[in-house]
Picture 1 (tube, one colour):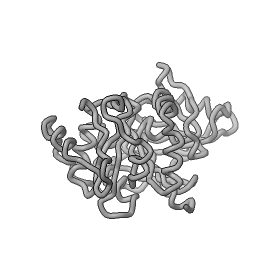
Picture 2: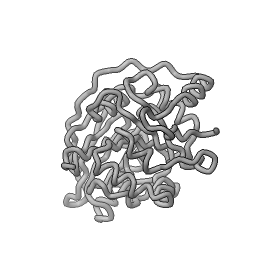
Picture 3: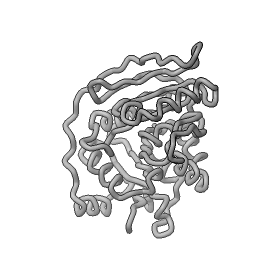
Picture 4: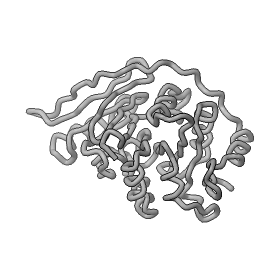
Length: 271
């Protein structure tokens, strides 16, 4: 698999989980797969697999041309699933936000760090916002300890990453200090509603679903750090999806299967 086919779409924040949502980003995630009706799987591990985040995911994607499902690692005891087989059957894996520290610990306990690297190398698009963005980089800035702090990620991308660069300004000072002292490599600071597309290890496009969105390349400079603005492409607006009621969400979840793969079903929550 060539580097150009190993793709990651890393969003600073927002997406389907942030009311009123960023439907243009949701549609862009599917476009990256470059195939009709791509299979997309949500990994909501970072927030403890909350039903609200899963419901919002289905509300965003149930009217788009795709086959959505999700994987709940916290519910494997009540609904076992072959995690590797499920994830490698996807065209897009979408990681939700929450605690980067807890996300990585749980993934490693289940062996998902290796599975996700294998998926990436096979050409499955990896995507996510907040913790689901920073996890792909060599390092990120997490608030899992309370105060912002840099921690290692999976290292699929050689740079570092800081998210919520507009909505959580306290991360900025931490990120600057980490880059300045070389605790983390130079990298990307990204606001909510903004996403960066990588092919292999190279950033090939920066997009925004919001007016005033911004992202920076941050590197060490004499006396501190330098923020170099990235040129952003404004995505065409997309009409927001109609929210699902809880009853509709459960009905849709109960009906979902992976087509042409007998025995593989959505690994749901609360079942």
